[in-house]
Image 1 (tube, rainbow, N blue to C red):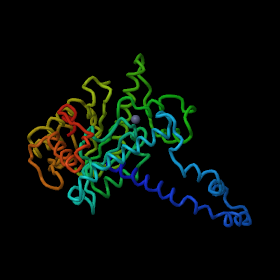
Image 2 (image 1 turned 45 degrees about the vertical axis):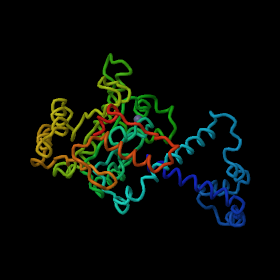
Image 3 (image 1 turned 135 degrees about the vertical axis):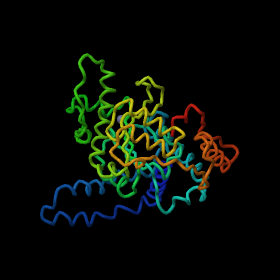
Image 4 (image 1 turned 90 degrees about the vertical axis):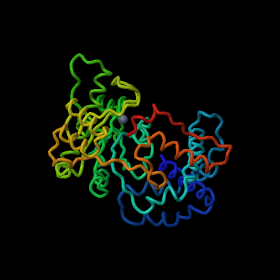
Length: 358
Ligand SMILES: [Zn+2]
């Protein structure tokens, strides 16, 4: 979210620059006029030049949002989002150098996360402080093959020991792939083409068939990734985990639950349960090694041990027993102190919202 708001801030700046320099540009017609003398260049570049020469466009950019008359208009909604983003960014700025310095020069994430672009799926469901820890790749349908370069960058260049595939209940991309491809735009159709979903089981209700398809997709992505990074998985340098983020409680295990369904292609629920017990239990590395055994990983004992998370707050280690809730509260308190007293925190934290985050 920080990255998003920061990039939005940058977007705002560009708009201002465009405003300031609005009268000076578009001096290109002479160059464009020379172009036709060149014998038949590739057609693709021509429409763009024609659009640049269009005289009506600068006026619209010159006075953005001036003509909105209703809060429901797209321009008003866009303005509202940007206003909130820039305000919220003050909190990020308020964290100060001390917060950013530890990762200013290099990133050291521990997880490559591939998840759906769906706006209801955000990393704060599993990590309240994802900066420098979650290398997140997103697309519709949380697909590995569509973003293989990004996933390889996280796994092979940044050496994240975990590749987490997060699908979600109610996934529109999966539903679209279950439907008629002809009704999709060419761009969406091509991006969904690699989603291979099994046929629905006979007699299953449409809602359940949808959840089955979401589950099958996560399993397929884990399968693909595990095979692609097989050497790293076998050596214990990488663990591939598939999970469903269930903000609709379709699985009946609680709203917002991150349900792990697959570890290195193992989907047997008994083994997954044993793995999760060991990961979350007090056994630390020994427990996690047991977990690796529980899912039948083909790796030396302990090789798949999940590193114990060393909690830091603004670069300083905090107590090993500190809860996620306590840590987030501290971060928000610090951000709050950096703001004028009149501003209120925009985030509230409760145990129920954060207990599943790690
Ligand atoms: Zn989705």
